[in-house]
Image (cartoon, rainbow, N blue to C red; front, side, top):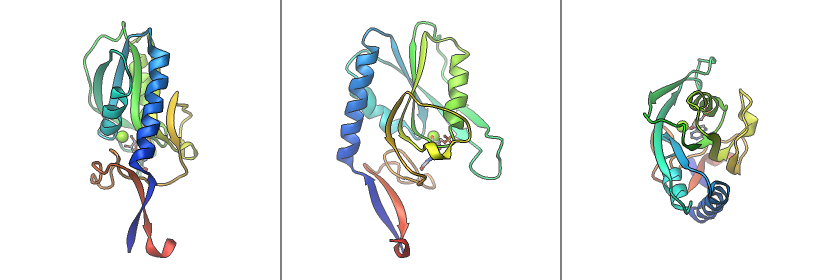
Amino acid sequence: MRERQILFSRQQIEAKVKQLGEQIARDYHDKNLLVVGLLKGSFVFVADLMRAIDQKIVIEFMTTSSYHDAEDSTGRVEIVQDFNRDLSDFDVLIVDDIIDSGLTMKSVYELIRSRHPKSLKTCALLDKPSRRKVEFECDYVGFTIEDLFIVGYGLNYGDYYRNVDHIFVFVEENEK
Ligand code: IMP
Ligand code: MG
């Protein structure tokens, strides 16, 4: 039997998002912030985070798809959908749900850097540093976690559970 074990409750996530939003607002108060959310995973987090940042923001989305989970060890990250905007006037913050191998953030970071924004930083609600395949340090991290597959609050399992308002892990009954 599989059971759900709550890792972060809705209240814990809310408090963390508020704290991140306040920190970003302090750092960007005199800047021209453009948030790039990576779909699909980050859409719930981005929606809450941007409302926790009390200033003018421009928002764009990019859809990424990674092929590095299974047999492919080359770590290709495909940009399934891009956005079209001149970034030279913007301080860009890339936002994802979670950093695992680091391949997604690193390749998106390099792609956006090649478009010469005024500045470029990254933010992820969750970070699994022990899983890195490439070196990548994120500027704003909500929670640092162990090597666990987590679900909910935008994060999916077989494309389901993104709508769950907290973050959980599946545990086998006999593992408890
Ligand atoms: P990376 O490119 O390996 O860093 O993987 C980043 C992407 O993998 C994230 O944007 C998520 O969509 C997905 N991912 C990584 N770990 C998890 C997890 O524990 N649960 C759900 N999705 C995950
Ligand atoms: Mg993702």
